[in-house]
Length: 129
Image (cartoon, rainbow, N blue to C red; front, side, top):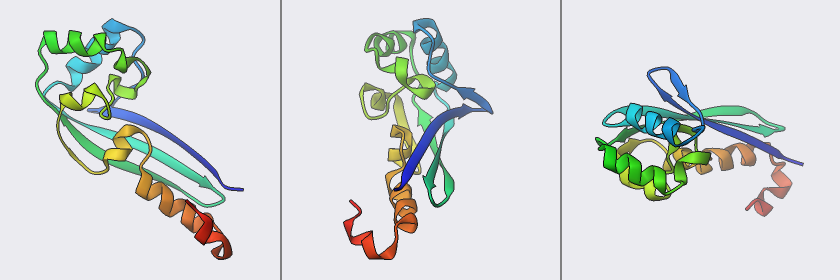
């Protein structure tokens, strides 16, 4: 049996942005990220095996109050660390990123698959999908 556990945080200048509590908190987070680069960290543990942390730098466009209101109204911010989802409408807020896009989505796939492969006995590796 292989167990995979992961969690993602958004870090702007050492401040960890969790999931927003409400619309005002989502706007606050978007305001902090507006026009700046922040880091997305995902820790992945595979048991038996090991743990790694993947880091991706994400740069946001400058956000107007109207853009923040529109995005908050989509409902996307409320269950996302940092208050945005790059795989949804929040992708329009991102100017560029350096690193793994799947990390920003919430699970760095290539790195996770490598950990699973390392934890899988050689005689069953062909069955890992």
